[in-house]
Length: 221
Image (cartoon, rainbow, N blue to C red; front, side, top):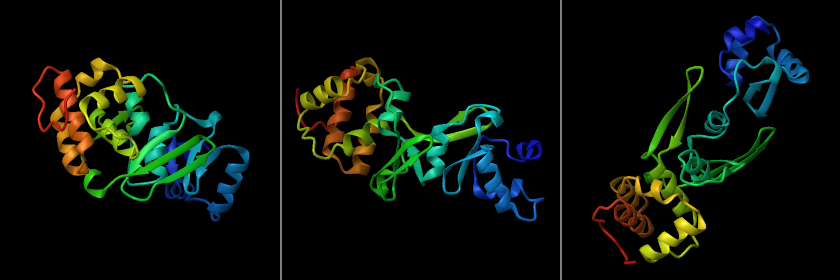
C-alpha cells in the first residue's frame, strides 16, 4: 500500500494510473478486486477511483471527479454559482456542462449531472481552479455559469430586463452586488455564441446594475 501511494499521489485516479501503480503484480486485476473488497480504494464509476478514507492524505475533490467522470466537461450551473457567491444555497448534486450528450451518474459519492450546450458556446468562459496537491479542475467563470443557467431554463419566458431582474433576484436569489460585479461584455460575447436574446438582456441588466450604459438591450424595465 505504501508503494502504491508513492506512485499515485492524487486522491482521484483512473484505471490506467491504478494499473501503473500495480505494475509489479503479475495479475493486477486480481489485486484491484482485492483492494476494492478491503476498502483500500473505492470505485466511483467504471474506470474512476478514490482511496478509502483510512488511506487518504487529503480530502478528495468532487469537482475534479466531475471533470474525470464525463468529459469534456466543466463545473457550472448552480454548483458554480454557489462557488462564486452568487446564490446562497449549496446544491447536493455536482452540476457540470458538456458539449456532448447530457448525462447523469449516481455514484457512491453522490449525483453528478451533465447538461449539454451548443458546441460553439462551450469553449469560452472556463477557468482552471488549482487545489491542494498540485491538482486542478475546470469551472465556469461567474458570467458563464449564469449564462449556462439561464439557457438551461428553456421554457422560461424572459422578454424584458424587468422579467430578467425578477427571475435573478427573486427566483434564483442572486446576490445583487455580486451580479453588478459581473462583466457585461463577457455576457454579450456568450450571447453571440449561444445566439441568445435572453443573454443580451442579461448583459444589459448587468451593465445597468454596474452603473454602465448597457449595449444591445432588447427590453426596458
